[in-house]
Each structure stands twice: as C-alpha cells, then as structure tokens.
Image (cartoon, one colour):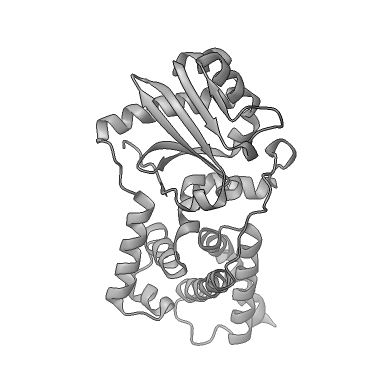
Length: 292
C-alpha cells in the first residue's frame, strides 16, 4: 500500500502538466481529463518499478492516448459543432473551459484543431513543451526525420503566411484591435472613430437575429449592428485570416465565425462574417504573432 500511495503522490505532482499537454492536444477539458485518468490507470497497473524518469514516461503515455483519441475522432469525421449557431448570450462556456481557452489562446486552439493528429502531437510536444524529437518519434512511431518534418509542417500552418508586409500588418493589427475593443465594450463612439464613413458589413443570415439585413452600409449602421452582436466578442480574438489581420469567434477554441476585415486609410473599410461550415473550412486561420 505504501508503494501505491507514493506512486499516487508522484502522479498527482505531474497531473497539472499532463492535463496541460492533453488539453492542447485535444482542445477539450473533458477529454483531457479522460486522457489523464487513463494515464493514471496505466501507471497504477504498470507500477513504478523500472521507470527511471516518471515525468517522461507519463508524457509519453498521455501523448499516445491523445494521439489515439485524435485518430479516432478523425476516422469518424466528427464535427464538433451543431448545425445551428448558438447565441453566446445564452450559451456561456463553463468557467473552467473559458479559463483554459484563454490561457492557451483562442486563435492557437483554432489552428491546432485544423492540424492532423500526428502534426498536432508533434507540434504540441516540441514547440509548446520542449520534448526532444527522439521521444516524439517514439510516441508517433515515426523516424526522427519524419517527426521533425511533422513539427515543421505544423509550425508553418500555425504561423501562416501574411500576404501584406510586416509594417502594414502591424498597422492593420492596431486598427482591428481597436475595432474589437470597441465592439467588446459596446462603445458606439469608438466604433465610429475606427470605421470608415462608407464601411460595408456583410454577414451570413444565419449569424444574425431575425429581420437584421445581411448587408449594412455606412459607419452609423455598421456600428449599431456591431454593438447588437457584442455578446459574441467574449469568444473573439485577433488572428491571421487568409493572410491578413482578422478576427475569429471560437467558444472553447472551436471555430464558430471568421471575420475577414479590410483596412484602408487607418480605418475598417469592410468586414465579412463567415459562418457556413463549408466556407469556414476554406478559410486559412493562423496565429497572429506579436510584432507582426
């Protein structure tokens, strides 16, 4: 019993880190907890004898479990979204999930969700937790060069490819950040300041309350329409959308809406709200790195 209690104590010391690894791999707090629990069950069956580096052993085991879960999810072609568009004002995320998503970053979770299982595991282990490639290769049952290639390919997808020069990207970031802050605060005056006088907003009808037109023109109309939907900004973050600064709305890191934003003359000249599943799959989302 003493040996089992000591093993449990050592596992509990690693639980937080294991859950962080599993959450980044799976994007779901519940599934992450399941993966960590399964890791404990495997450790309790194996016992601690012969495990020289418990932290490394546990990381390998939880990573393999997550990889299996990701592969199962992919093979079933599961769509994590409902057909309808939930209204955030009545569909708050559990606090635990919201805190986790904020700690990782909504844009990163969206991009990770678009990676293949092996790419996601390789990227999370190497780039987020500095696990050596020889151990990653063992988890993936791939060669060392193949593991490095998977991580490199995932890294390229995470970072994306800006279609505008760095200085221009930075200017666009400032404008879109000001727009999002004003929208989040419901600040009509600040929105009017950041919107071009002839701004156009186009949104798919499914994203709008009944009776609201899909297209709005003019700063006043667009500002008022933006304030009307401010509840969704709780789940919004800046991201690289099709190579330029845009916005993703992603409760729990699951992409719900993508906003393509056009910036001209230091103001928002237009923005488009995309919600259709097929169209979203064609939108290239990447993490907007600090400093462009």
